[in-house]
Image (cartoon, rainbow, N blue to C red; front, side):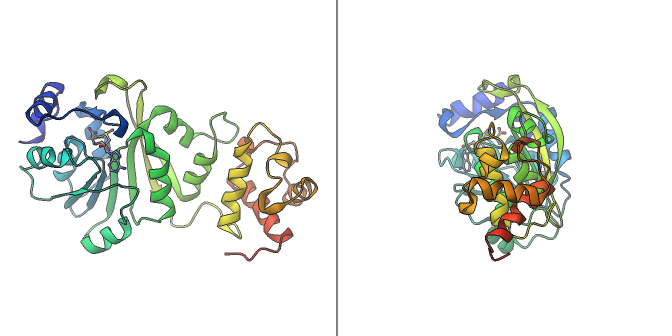
Length: 293
Ligand code: SAM
């Protein structure tokens, strides 16, 4: 079967019936039916014929098939073992796809990539299962998976949060973490009508390009992220209150740290740029005489 037989809702329903497959909502199984968005993900990710594409959650294989037509090799990681025979059927037309039955949160992607020795770059794509969007992104970034780009679909609201600027209500710890590691750009919107079954919310595709160097250089990355987490953990509070307790600092010490970092004590985390978070974290490192990384 080539991918054009798969695209339509009717084609997908036929495949699911043939295999007696029923969507598991608990696994975020909302399958993409719009060819335009599929093309946008492939084009937006910059895949070339030498590249290794890793797809997170292939589902019925629509995106996988499209990727296989542009890439050198495709590795698709799917947690639901019921989908493996379905994928073997829908993707039998292609000889450059490897299907792995595993949990993307548990698999060692760095090793997987090393073993495949791609001639070109590594591109990660996926229509992410909504219930674990943030853990997946954090794993890809924190494990420093050596991919040139991550082009992924997620709930529109989460995409907006990732792209928010400081001062925006939706700017949060996820925004700070993603922009620390990556440059972010919008690729496409996907309204809920583009999925089978239809989810409750709209989606959007964004692309993350890993920076050569993180956006800022804190003395200690660990303390930097702890400071961000503290700040946003109690985002309604002023920074002096919200960062109190980070590495055991008292409220007075928190005030001192903010003064030294040149950040007003009554500001809130959502107004801080990454450079300011780094300056605050560095003052905590100095005050508490923590070993820099
Ligand atoms: N790529 C397909 C598409 O666009 O139609 C399916 C996308 S669907 C939103 C998410 C897929 O991720 C499902 O196939 C689901 O079974 C799979 N999935 C859910 N949790 C996963 C995990 N932890 N590891 C790997 N795949 C997972």
